[in-house]
Length: 351
Image 1 (tube, rainbow, N blue to C red):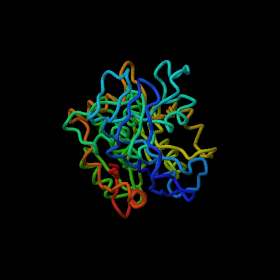
Image 2 (image 1 turned 60 degrees about the horizontal axis):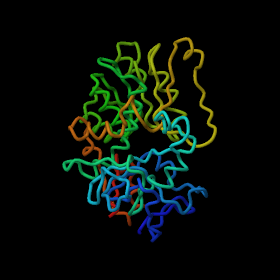
Image 3 (image 1 turned 90 degrees about the vertical axis):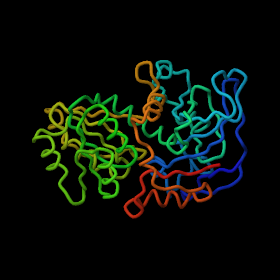
């Protein structure tokens, strides 16, 4: 099959590799139709990472079933599916209580099977494949992973009616966070340095959208909240900006409020000074959020699919750019230069 492999300089080489085979009777093989580029992918872009060299990357994908194992009962060849890529070892204490998003072997397992979006085929257990309604496109479905990350953070934040929410970052995660908060009846302010992203936030229902380069976020949030501060702040920028955005989040939140950390950190130790005395004396909660799994008895990816299918979440407005797999380096360049290109969600057509 054709796949994009990570190179020594952190770009991609599209080449022919061995097609995966079904390793167990409950596994499914699917042809990938559309994959996406998210902030996690961009953190690996143009970085020399020997551990990832020659690997197939990508974890936002939708496609079509082509083969099923003999014990698969709910899927058949031809079914349109979205594929969940958060997959633990299935045997640890955390997997046993459906918290596989914090499984110690999460990345070892997911990258061996379902988290290989930039290739023509993937395989995984039946339970990781969700049937798509006919009216949900492959492109829209590729955003379900992103929205599921948002929903997990939304659940941890315990968003409720009439709260004042601040979202730092208007990429796909931040815009998903905005939509979920609005669905819950909250008022939402979005902060980002890119005007085109802020325009989209307004289109999706943001009550206020402010440019972090030209305005004082703290002053505007205080104006938005009557001087109290936000009930919940979602940090959705992450990456290299985290040393600036995480302290900002703690300054935007009210006493007794929550900061939910959704954006990803760089690997290894990172020193980020915070006003710990003020945080402690104000009983501000800092809540890390990692991927997604289950909420009570419900799989969060399945919940998002239902919200999207019912029209309660809008994925189509986030899709700003489209590329073929052979153009994957150009796709990453566009996604990485969002201030110039206006990119939000970049979709890659695989096959």
